[in-house]
Every structure is written in C-alpha cells, then in structure tokens.
Image (cartoon, rainbow, N blue to C red; front, side):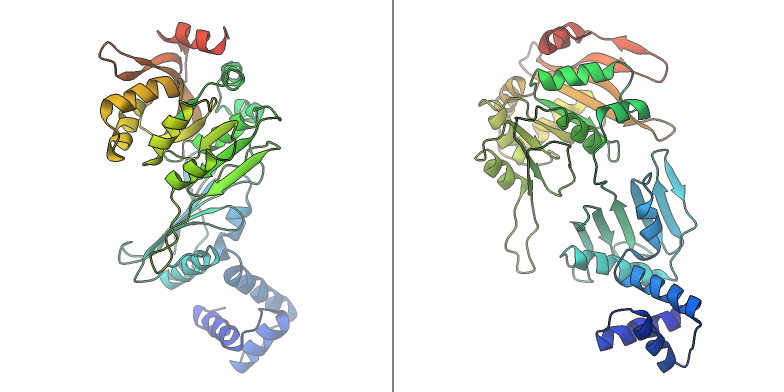
Length: 382
C-alpha cells in the first residue's frame, strides 16, 4: 500500500473509532475505491495492527531474542545491537512522519507527553522496554527513537560466563561477593551490561532475604522469590506528582530490606544510599556510569557535593559503606565483559581511592596490589 492510502485507512479507523479488523479495513479501502483480495487484505490488517497497536516495522526486531537495543535515527536508519556492536538493518519507515507517529504513540502508551511543547520522552513501556524519543527540531532531520529491550527472564551467572561477560574464574569471586554480603557498585559506560550483571548477581542472593529495588525506570528483574520494586515517575503536565530516586531510597529504608539496591546512582540519592549502607544495611549495591573503575570515588564525590554533602563527610561514609567496584567495558567486537575488580580504600590523605585487585584483558589475567585485601574481604576466595 502507498503511504497515502495507508494514511487514509488510518484516518478512517481513527474517525470511526473502529479496531483494525479485516472487515473494518476492507470497508475503509472500499470507501477509498480500493478492493483487495483476501491475502492482500490480511497483510494490510497485520501491518496496520502492528503500527496502531505494536511497534510497527520494529516489531520483528523487538521479538528477536538476541536484540538488546533498537535505535532509529531516520526513516531508513534503523540499527540494532545483538551484543556484537551496532548493525544497520533493512527495516525502514515510509517517511519521517511515520517515525514521529510511532514515537508519539509509544510515548502515549507509556503515559508520557511527546509533542512540540515537550519534544522528548523517557519512559518504560508495559512490557518493560525502555523508551527514549526526541522530536525535531531538537533531533535534526528526523525523530530519534531508542528502545532498550528488557527480557522477561534475567541471565544467570552461568549464562554470563558462557557468553564471556564474566571471565573464567570470575564467577567464584562474584559468588563470594554476594555470600560475604559486601556492598558493591557496578560501573561502566552506557550499554556495557551493568543492569544485566546486577540482575544476575541478585539472583544469587539467598531465598530468605528481601530485596528492595529503587529505580528511575524499572529494568531490573532478578530471578529471586522476594523482590520489591519501586519506580520513580516524572511530574505530570501541571508539574506535580514527581517521585525521585531519592524519595524511593528513603521509602525503601522503611520496608525492611535485607538488600537495598539502587538501579543507577545518578544524583542526590547517593546521600541516603551511603547513609543506609553505614547503618546496618549490608550487601547493598547499584550501578554507576563511569569511564573507569578508578573514577568511581570522584564520580560519587561529584554527586554527593551537588547534593550538599561536604567532601570529607562523603569520603568518610564511602570508606565505610562500599567495599568493591566491578567495572564493565565493551571490547572491540562489541562484547560486554568485566574488565577489572577494585577495592575501595583510604589513601594517606584520608580520601577513598579504588585500588586494582583483579584485571582481565583479552589476552591475560592478573592479580593486582589490592588482591590480598579483596581476599580478606571475601573470606579467602581464590
């Protein structure tokens, strides 16, 4: 069908309030002087239902179990990530307006506003998929659409070892980390697999423990029998009703957590998280954007300072609260993997630094100066 004819059918269905059933689509086509055979008609119905109810041309990509990200930069620029770097697909839209319509409909499904007055949206779809969209003219040329797929089943640690995300022998270290109830952070860049690894580690927590998750957008789905999930929300069109991650952390502390988890530490919630981990909430964890594990203390210092916590107080709390940093990278082939493990210690000036303990590269495995300290924390793991 031509874009014009498809628009005509879409408008007819919208005006009549009808579902895109074969009979209704056939009637809409007849009103426009077009008659199709049964096979053609069913094909049109499938296309319309996918566009009006699903994710349109992106449906097959989102259904692919290997796809983690779908990125649309223009009508004929649809990229996917299958864990080996970005690939340009053959999927395309009829025009830039089709991309805009899909972005606006998905945003509406997620309960978000997306129009010229508010040209971007960040939300979670009902199936858990993370949506981010930006309209022109903020996005030059065409609407940009990013979809992060959240699979219903979390990866197990064994599966991450098989995929190469966890290096050989690394699973013993990670299991010991959970068993020792150490507080830790997973650092790395965007799309490096932080959430995937965190969910796998939470699956190792004992079944009798209660895990309370606080996230801006609910992505963590650990395979665990007792998980409480709290999700933030933006303000409504009147500017009211916003629930921040800091609010969620405060509420989580009142819910008797055995493990307090912050999906991504990115703002003022760092103050409450560090305070909680210093008051008996062992085994807490979260993720943090950082270029390297060595940058984690400075990154936390910047967040804490912005929230009103002075430098000395932050480093004092950090030293007592967080013990280990796991850092993830994406290598040259696009594979996500743990690059190193560091322990947090105070230096001679009283500031917290991340000391290398284990390092994995493509070619080698190495013990670093912090290995003995890590062994002591984990109870002698090798």
